[in-house]
View 1 (spheres, rainbow, N blue to C red):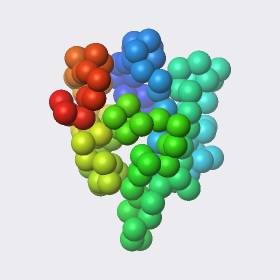
View 2: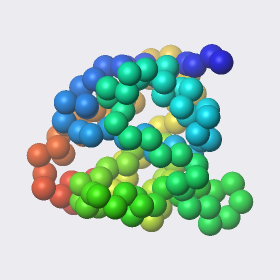
View 3: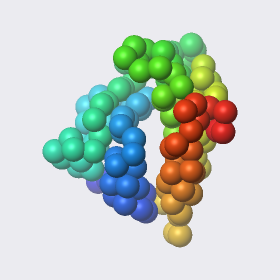
View 4: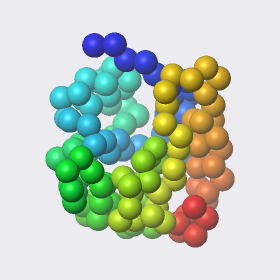
Length: 131
């Protein structure tokens, strides 16, 4: 398997892990996602939790929604989801930060923008008011 990492991924994860509890919630299958995540974070030191396609809501064929209410031990005000598909966080739009899809573009700096924004809203008691 070949994995093409988005520019600045390592830096973004290292930096954000100092402020946030990092969880990956993917609409991908568990086998595929685990292979990718094990490559990115082999010792599971940064990505603390993993949720997969089977944890998504599937309202219609081919559509996967990441309903954050399945995370029972956290309040919604304490959860932020970053995704390239706004449909993925359709049930909690106030918690969602859209990010451009990565298509291996040269000069992609989307993760730098995301890190800057997440750093700005970190201190807010309820960041949903600022998203």
